[in-house]
Length: 93
Image (tube, rainbow, N blue to C red; front, top):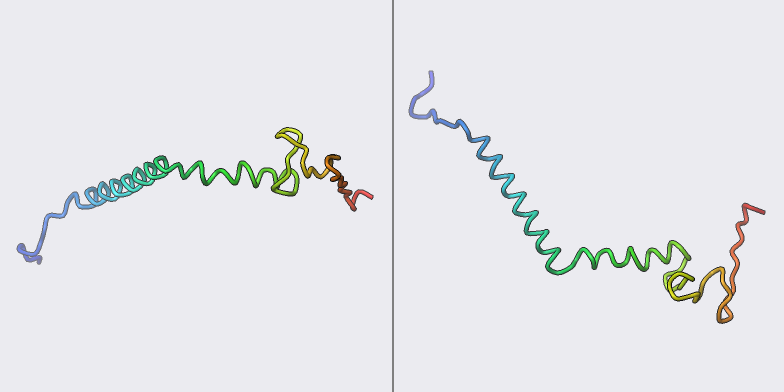
């Protein structure tokens, strides 16, 4: 038999903890979103992907200018300023 002095009414405790947890996670997300938008970190993190990584993927080097962005300068398949390179696929021979 339970002692009536020890038994506590704990109904609703799980709901209260869930609401506090959701509020904590939501406030953390809002603080992080405000921080990213205030300091422009999203644009700063995306800059290498849109510039350096894109030209490296397209041309094989990061400092290459193609015909579409003010080039050709150090373009791997264009003759300009004495720079001429041809890449041959050895599997195709």
